[in-house]
Image (cartoon, rainbow, N blue to C red; front, side):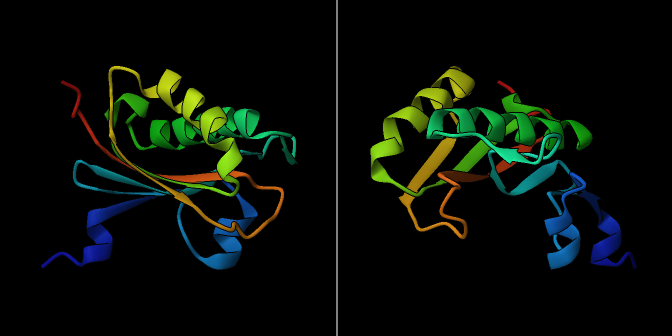
Length: 134
C-alpha cells in the first residue's frame, strides 16, 4: 500500500516562509495542483510592489512559476480564492484578474480580509487540474 505522502509531489518556491512554517508553495496529487496563498512579494528582489495592481501582477508571476514547476500553467486554473485587504482595491485587482483569466473563467471567491502584513494588499490561492483546458 502506498502512503498518502508518496502519492503527492511538493513544489517549493524557495521562500524562507515555506521552510520556517513547514508548507509547500503547491502540492500535486494526481491531476490536481493546489497552490498555497500567494502574494505579490518579489522573491528575486526581496521587495513588495506599491499598489494593489502591481502586487496582483507579481502574484500572478509567482503563481505561474509555481504552476510551471508542477507541469501546469494559469490556463489550467479551475478555482481561485482571493483575499483583498482594502475594498477600494477591488477594481485594480479584478482588472488584472480579468486580463489574466479572460477565456479561462475559473470559479472565484473574493473576500475582504485583514492580511498578516499591512503592506500586502492581495493574496490568492488557486486550484488547477492538469490538462483541464477546454
